[in-house]
Image (cartoon, rainbow, N blue to C red):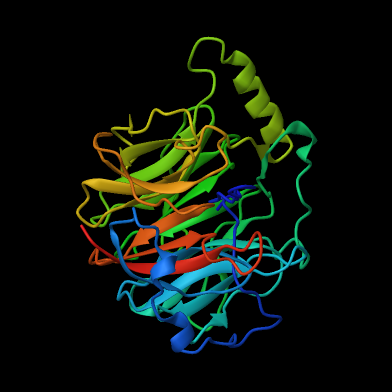
Length: 367
């Protein structure tokens, strides 16, 4: 869903990061079992919550890997090469049976698997052009593109049967599912600002959940479907922030956003009872509920004064008890728990074959 690079920062949700790309639909080459065995060097000594960590991808930019409801498969996005675009892939949790399931055209982001593995959900720009969207103009600083060509789609397990769910003009992306597969929550600019919306799994019954000036996005449901966690930046709410709001609105007109400040919020699934859970002035993103509904795991550059190093943290839904989870150099982000809380999947720069690579890792979770 948006992209940031650690060091360069990959952040996303927009976070458009990620994966070993292949030229056409079909299986990607799979590493041998011996190559994917746990390696002690993959975990930093201070990463006490990780056991049996394994690397599942080995080249390119791969991230936003999300479990199926049976915890046996992952949907993720990725590409390899500066001129290639993120596409959606499926693989099993051993890193095998990898295959492309998006169209291979445009840029894709934010994939999710419906219960029972009947369909997949993702966003794509391919209807506007088969080519990658142009890169943003960084003359105004570090910005994320908000492509107006993004729409939300579902497809069969093999990528066939593509169905378009959103047809409003402008950006529709960052879509995720409730665990029962009945509701989708997503980010859209359809009402003139970047806000969070929900809809039924067939695209009907769209409802706006946020309305504060500024960016609201990257939403995820809690396991019971009663709460939504998301990232947001609401400029103009404090002393001297009027210029920041003007800057936000000017950039949005150009299809851009400046992602240097993102705090985490939680709200009820109907948009009520919004409350802020981080207040560190950093770029916090990719929040996900622990299955117990009491904790949230997320990524942040708050521990790095330069803002270039992203690590994974955990915090209570009341904003208390924050704990740092990862300590490896470079980027660690997009964490997601398996439905039983026994495993964690995430993206990381660790053990990169070349500079800029981000790969998918999975670890047993130790409380």
